[in-house]
Length: 190
Image (cartoon, rainbow, N blue to C red; front, top):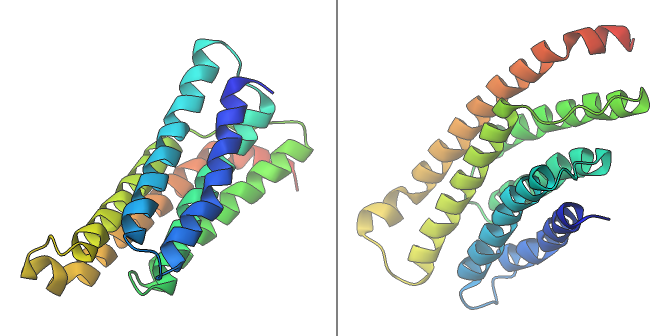
């Protein structure tokens, strides 16, 4: 296994740690720890791709696992946010539906011998998802450590939900682009 793939596997292993910090309210500064773990995981997303391209070590395993690791990281965060009442379930379900649809198409492609790597729109979508999760966690860190204005506390759920709805809209858009780019393959695999 090359270095880029090891970094991707490391990102997958960070997901349960992130979930633990988000859901265990007995941990002092849990949102700060969750933010740290999430940022480290997000950096690995950039790093693994950069290393794979730099050393020409792109593999089918990496092309498959990298977007899956991103989905695990992002969806785990959003689902935990629902559990702790930070965001509405509806936009998260929209994001989850799109990601399951795209992942299903990728699995069909793999079974037919074709690996469908993430396109630029999917990468932008993932970056915006990670940025919005970072912002939601940062807001929670400010509240958790009493470093906030009354405006933030009063409107934190509105801010969080605006962020997640923007992500849902972008996710739908990137999913439509993905389907359009792969429509020929989808028709062939009937």
